[in-house]
Image (cartoon, one colour):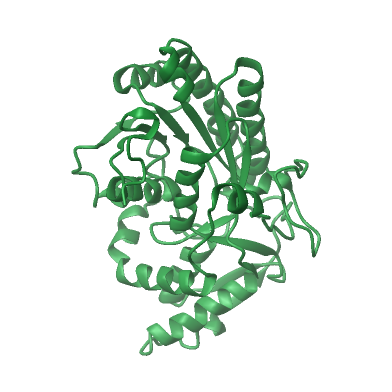
Length: 363
């Protein structure tokens, strides 16, 4: 099925910021493989952005890559003028909570200053478009459920939950959300905002919990778990998230916010235990079995939110999107992918990442 057949009267020219990152690369692979859209990938290529994640689509004549920083106003203007996008999906961000604790400056610069710089470049570009193209244009901002803060045992994040960010990362993303909303209300820029739960799946940089635990377990290293491991997250398979973003771009109402969740709540301890059990099964000859014996508990990180959980009823009811993967099926696919793609992990890792747990300096 071609997803964007004659969308808005012509083939979609979609500019994706942060397209070499985990979610961005999953989105671009889907768009190239399943649509007729032309994709312009704008990425600074920081440590977590790697073009190896896009090798399967890099040769497509509908794929273009521009190495640029969203904080560079001249570069953003140049990209917009050259490629004349009909829509923008803004995913470029510093996104690791632990790194934001150890060094918040990069998060403020990219997530706040970068989003402001991009918005201003896009506003100038959009203002000069012919009326039909101006009306059809969309700026989609991809954010996180962490902007809402921490939940009690039973409630869910909705699109109207007040913001209460508790880490430098979530504060910077909350600020970027507010900027996007302000550019809609003040200048009329046609925006869409999504807030998602924890993503997982293939091609995720091995500093995040699931790929980190897989890598550490394979090497027989300690599987370090913060606190008691009782912090709860709602897990969303990255390909499901990419489908949701496409759905919002095509059918979402301008100015609206859509929460995207996987309906998969698990404690961090449960996630690591499930990973260990899958590894025991898939690596029967491993000298590190049972892998649960590698689990060890460390001091909790500062400002560690207890629970996140998304109410995704709005996107389900209004846009007819629902996740296709359960956590059981998605996690197994993810573990198998990392076992089968150790060369990719070796390629993306360099001296900047030692695969240790970060964010403990405040303790």
